[in-house]
Length: 306
Image (cartoon, rainbow, N blue to C red):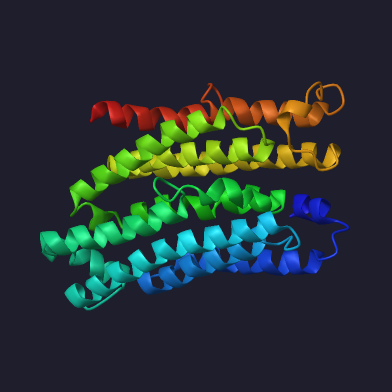
């Protein structure tokens, strides 16, 4: 919050920014604390709306407006597939309460189980920017940097992983769909990492890295290693938010410059930011004793065991 206050200080529409942020926090809490799938879907839609509002926050920039629209449309595809999955669940179990649905999960027919899991996976893939709905996340960097750190790295985009872990009894009835999830995660992991190598905008580099790390999480939950995936979700939230915030400080210090080809030699001028960035980077690439090592290795171990 302090970072947000400092970053947005002096912006003409500062109040609107914090109103949107409060809406986002409400939506995200609704998503993770709901006791049934209907309230989860309401929170799911509302975080998409908050994301749309915050990406297009500087609406005088045509690029920001276009990026917001793109994010909204791609997320709407996921919302639609989730809603269809919920209709099937109501028809089959007569309820959307987690407890009722999970106890009746093993009585679902193979077709129903697969369709429900596919619908939920569609929602997860759209929200978490995995193949083939991955293109909105790099464009989402048009919003203010605290938004990139809090929403498009730490919380909202990892909601897809949370959804698969939360509804794991349904996914376990559809092992092929879990395998699909692991496959999409593995492909996104490699592809996004390779694309990140040729990006020149400091925030887009970190955005592609986020896509790659969420690929790791999808790989974990797709292998049935739900705890491993959620552990990486947790550690990633911290080191990726650290990287985004450090990038925001650099962008501010360079009066809005985001091209990494024009940067260099900032260690002498910004020693604290330099140290923070190095710590975030070492954790991201999984160097012990940083947290990334402890959360990425179990995922690779789970993949090896399969």
